[in-house]
Length: 269
Image 1: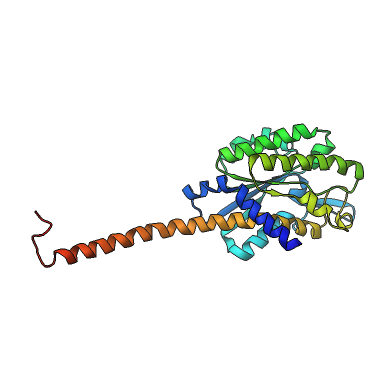
Image 2 (image 1 turned 30 degrees about the vertical axis):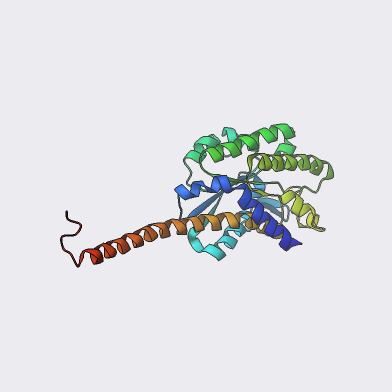
């Protein structure tokens, strides 16, 4: 079953992202930079013995490890998560970790892929699903306009039943944006909710333990790996094309020399 979901995720990712991947034909890359944007679950906060803080064992680090195991140092995943933030703050350049509006940040970024992971703080700050939908739509459209490939991620679920019900509505909005804008989706909420013991793998009411962060990275990898592979395939094909064009030219030159060798004046009239 997991294998089937993995194949489906890869196929859907490639199909949905085909328009965005077409930019790679014009901007071929020997390096792929992925920037991970999101809240504290992107940053990688976990609570150990009552102390909460960013941990090196987080989903972004694990994802980079998996990608580099396959592609080497050609792939970098930069963790730009900021605790306590919402999608609307990333769009507007407000809130903690202010770094300017989304459009300006992406215009200055060399990333080809950007991942977007929000929803938990929207619940905690009583945003409506409609407000969240609008913010994520804006983030995706801006990224696409600037030639980036956005990958949406639903949040991991929350142990509190009341909060988790509201988070489910946010996850539904993320799925809607992904479908409407034809971008890849990593449905962490659905995948983790299907695990029988997921609540035991949470360090508090919102943040996973390292083991669950690894699970999240595996879900990310299933969707993002085909996108990275496609970018490298396009780069390799672009290198081969000039070589293929040069070969017929050499053949024509040799043929021309051969055809005039018996008559030095032929072709000079």
